[in-house]
Length: 343
Image (cartoon, rainbow, N blue to C red; front, side, top):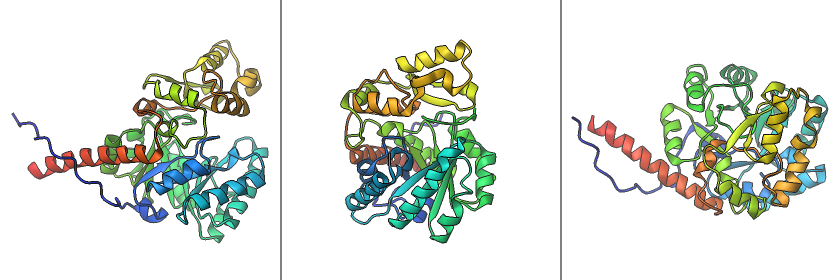
């Protein structure tokens, strides 16, 4: 019988861990904080950037173009010249997408050159992005959509699994299975997202062949996240079983915190609700922002959340979360290297 590997001292964290995505984005570690509606503001994104990863300000979270421009300027001041990104999500409700074109132009005017796109394919945004020499990573839930985005000319793709908090689409495959299939068909850099909140998973994703990971839920209780402490405490108290999916019947699957609001939405679905109007204010983003994130009423609102929330340890700075992820990743990687060396 093969003896167990002897425990080893945790290796020192290097200054950087280069991959195709770190080189593409000019960052030190392959850690991406995906754009989170209402939460990915200048302070949170800048904290992730200073910690060595990349974050994306969510363009849809700003109520006016002037607010969005100010958020970009605030982030630029907080990052001391380091690059940061902007999330542009295209909706199936076409009337909302003109605003994304306007905000793309504002971001380019303010010097942003890194973009995360999501929702519909980013074809309407690509001409302006390309003309500016900017970089785009497109987030999708199906391997075929990742291949289509590659053929469209994006620089990289994020592929999410069914575990993703927020909108994993109709995909029923878990993150790592999705990624293993995608790597047989992609030649551009790949980030994996969905259910990732521990450094062991980062090491596993990189060993699989991914170039970065995308995370969100584990950062929701960070000190820099613009949300009420009562909400953050509810997040920290939530384990891996504390989320659920709703709205699958509308073709708009949403993985959220399993709170009272979520249970009301699920009950309406079971009773036959089949249009957005049937759910009324229960699924309003503005209601979520006002009641849960601002007022701390965590049993109200649609609170995007994935099972990786179980790895949240407390209300702590982004830098501390990143440091812990790095240590866990290095420890898992060292174990794998010892296995290879002893073979």
